[in-house]
Image 1 (cartoon, rainbow, N blue to C red):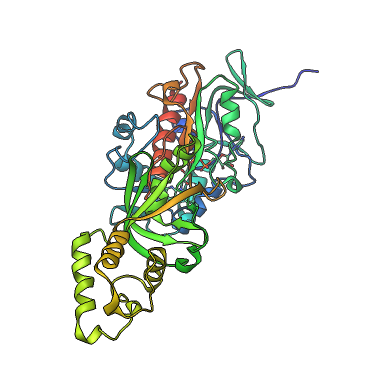
Image 2 (cartoon, protein in one colour; image 1 turned 180 degrees about the horizontal axis):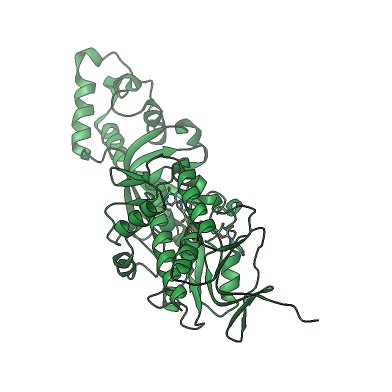
Length: 409
Ligand SMILES: Cc1cc2nc3c(=O)[nH]c(=O)nc-3n(C[C@H](O)[C@H](O)[C@H](O)COP(=O)(O)OP(=O)(O)OC[C@H]3O[C@@H](n4cnc5c(N)ncnc54)[C@H](O)[C@@H]3O)c2cc1C
């Protein structure tokens, strides 16, 4: 018996952020398009982005923010479909946006607005949608590709990475393209919190948030970022920790020891802190007070307790007994609070994937060089950006470029 194949010009696998834009762009270029999604609904991850508000882009972006094998090429993609083109694309399909401190959100500040306008546009552009259909194989066939019982002249793989597998992006896309011979840079969790080796006393600071600079040290400093650090029961979190986590992931996977060093007073030098604390200990009114009391206005109480414990100062001792050496150690530790890192959290907790399809595998339209007719978009590619809208911007940019090129045929 011959199985009749539904035939399309383009099959897009994965109806997430980049896949929906790729399908729309292909259909607008005149192609007959189908969009295939493993979940029962499209764009599930979009609803989780930006804490439910969807930070869909960032301004300005010059490309230097991205890492991975695509970092050197992202600028040229953004020049073709960057922020202006993205905002105008969304405006045309009915989404207004607003910008605050560079972060771009839907005007409604609700992620479902972004998903809805994409979903309605997919429905109204003549794209055939298949849901509850997880693809585990793409076969090269004469004149294109067979995907189960579907045939398509060209295929766009938009299956995302491995981050947040509950949303549908469970890393199955890597197998699809690895089986076709494409090279993959080992995928690792990024934009994720970390566990410290010093577990014992982490409970002292758990729940505290403090502004500072976070640096990743292996043999040397390999990355740093500034912002609000969050202390957790077993480690560290917060945007600056997320932003450096890709470097920690990679270093640990290469078997290197990693330290995270915090500067909790980046605006003051060690000597500024020393002389201020020395002044406090010498003031008559504080002579009878405890170290705990005089340091209460310098840093969060719990951080003081943790630091004093770590450097062996009795926090309840009289402030006047604090020696020069102790003051100097206290100031030095504020400026350089070191943690040995045990691990990063897994993909379940990660917001993006560092690693993926090597950019050497694709041309300037994100078409595979080895497998003509195969295109790749979004997080499956080896490129990742920091928190702040950069990863979705790549999803829109890559989806639009690959979709329009594939659609033109
Ligand atoms: C909690 C969270 C918050 C985030 N917040 C932001 C933010 O505010 N700003 C920002 O820029 N980025 C954010 N990101 C990152 C951003 O969401 C992703 O980088 C982006 O969604 C990637 O788009 P994509 O199209 O490559 O993949 P995805 O959006 O992950 O979509 C992939 C789709 O493919 C489907 N699929 C996978 N495998 C198969 C298969 N074998 N067959 C069929 N279908 C398949 C999946 O079900 C999914 O629907 C966040 C991520 C998370 C997890």
